[in-house]
Length: 376
Image 1 (cartoon, rainbow, N blue to C red):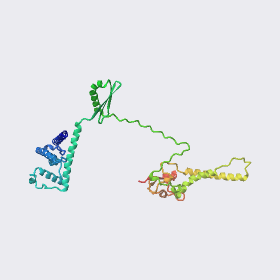
Image 2: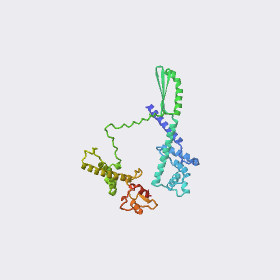
Image 3: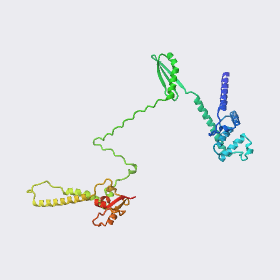
Image 4: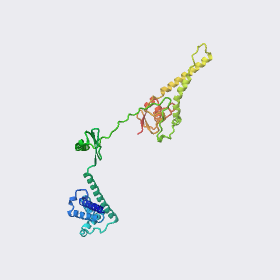
């Protein structure tokens, strides 16, 4: 029992010594700005006295009033205070120097709830800052933990040293452990030098995988169709009849129907001798041949009048809407809102001229007389 009591007494003495060391060595926290040298030396003595008093009364968990005055004193020389912090500064300073109340009558005798909350919060923040600085200094002074490993096998000794935050250093030496022991200090120095240059080895990065070539679809297998975008998922494709209405639809249908009709009418029956063909059939054949020639001539004329393909121009299904283009005459007159108005200005006969508003379907001669420009 006596031994246990002695151990507890020794621990208590060391604990008090550690607390006393912390009270004497913990630096005072000042506001950044370089004005700490302007603080009176007497204030530092008051700081130590108040720290010891707080330790004896239960614990040093927040900054003392003298430390608050030290911080606010250096802060007041860097930036102006608000009314709340001015009252807090005067109130705390008056606890150290009561003569302030005589020289500054506006010094408050008590603080509001908000001001008292701000004062207590500042005391705890100053103390937390002191604790963080003390812990960081301890880490800087303490060396990192190291571990030395030695394994003897078949006349060789495997040396390995590990340190926190570093990759292990491994080396093999010939001989027994007793023979290798004198070389351990040099091995540790080499490890320290290597860690100083590069504590960790570069991370291994595997080479990029080659992209697999796209395999063509198997024979008879249809390619997969990509799904529509969300905005287009419910969109139904318009039929040709919906895309082209009125006269434009009729004009689009005529060129496509004419070649089919011409092909149907220009089919020639197998050749037979003139002696084998009856007279009536020969007459009918001549009439059909004449009709097919007329159809071919009509198709040729329509193809000649059709405009040349122009990739830059909109297709019939995407015709420009009224108001997107302006039309000018060859002599500079214009602009006109539609092709029909431009043809009216040219004085073309409405019975013989095109009756649509499609500039891309005009003949080359009319396109030269009527020029289209984007509407600004």
